[in-house]
Image (cartoon, rainbow, N blue to C red; front, side, top):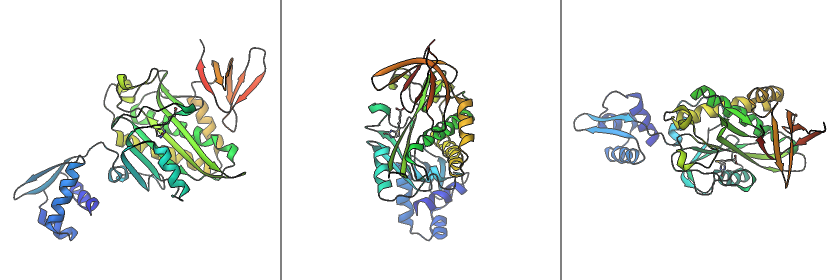
Length: 319
Ligand code: BTN
């Protein structure tokens, strides 16, 4: 009912709607309308109430509310089911449990803050309240376990494209899945998977984007879209764009058109063609980053001319 009241107010954005009108149109009692309006105000909607005139919606909060994420979202299945938290330990953990309980593909788990946000290689992901996007999608791709890296590559392409079209910033991908603007990290991706011997059951695609995060809140080497574009960025608007771009890329995997994703990844890559140092396990290798293969492995040529393939690791650019 609350969604219906909200939509009714939004449809009549610039006018007052009387409580009576809402009751009549939506077949609900006056007290119920009042209670829902109070709740909407509590969660951040600005709604004016004038005696004899009624209610008018003034502004919508930039919060990860399911009603707002769904409003105008142009996707077929990403974000059709949304689980939203004000605060949680990690959206990846919630999504993993939901996926085990057969949650539908495209289910989005999202939070305003994470208390134990997880990063790659056992690191944590700084997730301050209301500043970034901390989101996880449940995917059920028809892939063999050794192809799961394709999901990370397609996600990096989708998010880099969303940043470019929403903010105009020149985002680039640092292998395997960091998104950088001017060499500083704005987004990290953490995929987790459950698989049988030859088939993936599900993939959990966790994405952290620093949107309006301030410098003092971020670790060294990180930045936010606000810091780079020098203005506040609407998180809801960006999230919708990101979900749309991600779904477009994911459909390419479903349609066995991975080559197109690889090509876009190459065009957006910060790593390829550069001299890099890659840290893997407890070892280092320096060399030239040549290309990525079909599985998303980074191909590096060492100084003796030998080629090495890496499926994981930490890359730094060498001058
Ligand atoms: C990285 O280390 O670069 C990966 C960071 C991934 C962070 C996101 S935020 C949403 C999701 N939930 C988590 O706990 N981690 C991922």
